[in-house]
Amino acid sequence: MYYIVFGYNMENKITQLRKGILELAILGALSRGRHYGYSLVKTISGTSDIDLTEGTIYPILGRLAKEGLVQTEWVESSQGPPRKYYTLTVKGEEAYRILGEEFRKLAAIVDNARRASAPDDESADHQVLSVTKETNNG
Figure (tube, rainbow, N blue to C red):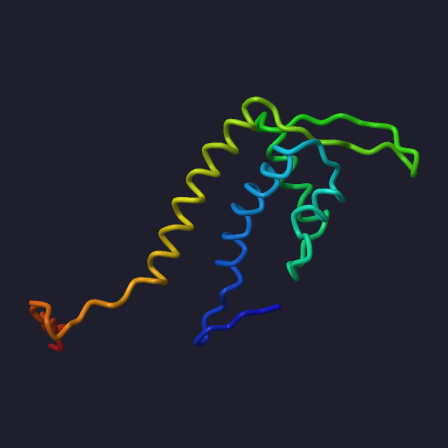
């Protein structure tokens, strides 16, 4: 789906926002127990209409593993081939705690901004600054 706002493509902004939040969501899900890729997709997306696939999750899991935030373990499955399970490391638990606190602060900023009323410009003392651009045509 493409979001165009006044001629501006919002896809890149949405992608960047999702990357950070999905990483935090994965850490959050893993803070409650081990998961394999598809179970993470189901846990994180829940009943929402977010288009989330294993193809989105696996690159993030790979990056988290490289950073030492998650560890992996292959587990035999009675329903098919072995599954690769992911669990948080101690470092991952600490990262989740810190990032979760920061996320709550940022969410509060967004919520405060949305709820705040605009200042009453008529009662505010303010000055208008006029700026013009001079050109040298010859």
